[in-house]
Image: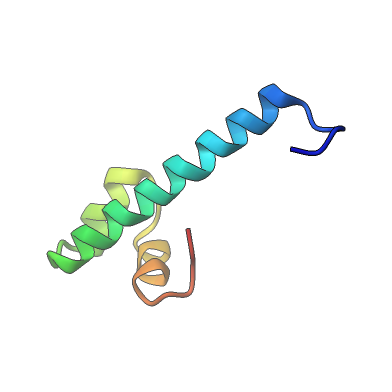
Length: 61
């Protein structure tokens, strides 16, 4: 950690990154199970179009 960082914010950012990576892994697992894009999207409050971008590798975690 750089000297000029705020430790509490760095920790929150690290938690966010881990949660986002876990969410994307979960979405990819549901895609492998061939769950409908709309159902996945509703489950995470994202559009089916955004889920399709994750499926297609256009969005990374």
